[in-house]
Image (cartoon, rainbow, N blue to C red; front, side, top):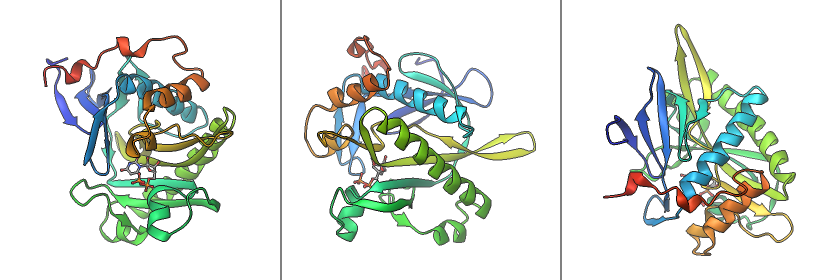
Length: 255
Ligand code: UDP
């Protein structure tokens, strides 16, 4: 692994040059961060579970015609993806009020929203990913009007699909974050879904008990993070028997 060219190391993933030009390997770490990395921890096996959950969701989205960067999972912690230029906007879709929406606007957590609400944040760790309007995106050229139209269209389709997927396994999809990229193929340029979709970037509540099955367990010191992530994977029919702690996070060894 050390002989590969590292392109970028983020909070939860490392990106390496892929085997072919225009490809990238996403390596899923066990590191967990919250509150713009002010809170840090390690959740043994998280990278393995998130790699598999994200694979499952990206493949399912491709099956319903949503273009994504995903090519294939290549190991327990890695997946091969197409290299894209990330659009510097985090796209948040909300079905139920929680988190920053509740604190910002005083809407009680758990309030069902009459329609899915899409919010945009400027991707900047330095600035703490501030909430922005569509007008900021267009004014500063972070995305073109056509890209913004694609992003909104795909975000709502992803929401419809994932709401149904999770409802089918007894989980409410409260909110989630998406990232999109520009894929260049010859003369063509298209908007594709990128990054990952996992309990790190979603709020997932058990329908019967209301139990949180996502990163809020880490953010709010509730404990049982890995049990919750594994429960999501188990209900999706992923990794039913694997002892994920066997697959050590070599990336972080010797740090
Ligand atoms: N989210 C994320 N990365 C971020 C910010 C938010 O994955 O940098 C996800 C978060 O997990 C939640 C949703 O987006 O599912 C909405 O997050 P919110 O704005 O409520 O912020 P938070 O409460 O996480 O600070």
